[in-house]
Image (tube, rainbow, N blue to C red):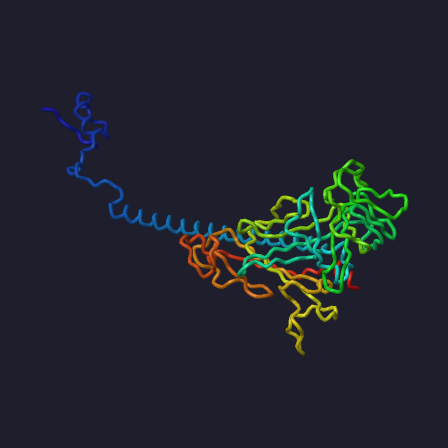
Length: 405
């Protein structure tokens, strides 16, 4: 029978070599616990995992809500900035154009100002029909956007009027021909009575100014040598029949070589455009997001140099009108209101009342063209779910003011 030695005996060096083998199992093998097969494993329980998942989901929902809110504010701010820029650009360009209205004929008397002008471009009558108005406001029906038409010349040589003493269908004899250059467009006005705007008026283009008398210029069809370019150019404002009216005398208004008759209007429901109707030009987009434009004439009806709105004390007349003036020499300014709309659709109805300007509230239209009281079938067409900015300006007609002074 083998003997097993204790560790103490082994430590004291009393173990013999033959007993080493028997000792090995005891010395180098620790005994296993009796319950080792049933010991617990370390880790998360099912409850703990469910709690962790719930906390993670709550965090994700919170993050997504913050992102959605941030993106909504960003979109609203960005779209509002776009509307602000569009409104500023639209008003700036409109004002710059309107301020020039009446240049070349601002001195016309009441019986000439407002006359119907026989005008054509390359043989085709100009539309809409030309009236000698410095500015014309065509009112939109039932609160729809108005149209504004400005008319002015650009002559650097003659900005006043010149009388003529003799006339044929293709010639006019002036008191002095200085200031009339080949290529200039000229308003011929004569045969006026005491009635406002009663004169006969024609638009012609100077083609020759070399007559021996030093006073007569010619306005015929065909080509001429332009004073401004030195090149052979086709006459675009003259017609084969010449001036329609028979004149014995009258007044000439030089509009220079590039007169403009600009029509400002909203197309497509939200784009402000300008079109030079005198030369059959194409519409030019000026600003997007402009959904309404309203305008009024400022008429100095009592000739006191002021345009009053009826709010004075003692009572003053309201000289801001939408009706066509009877005496165009009293028109001193217009006031304009532009309504710009943000492109961002808001889930909530953020505009609960129609925006207003000096003359009152704008008539609102849904994006599908229906009136403001209508609830459109498509919620995205509801005007109340968009933000708006109003731009307004009183624009003086300096050429009319100088003419009156």
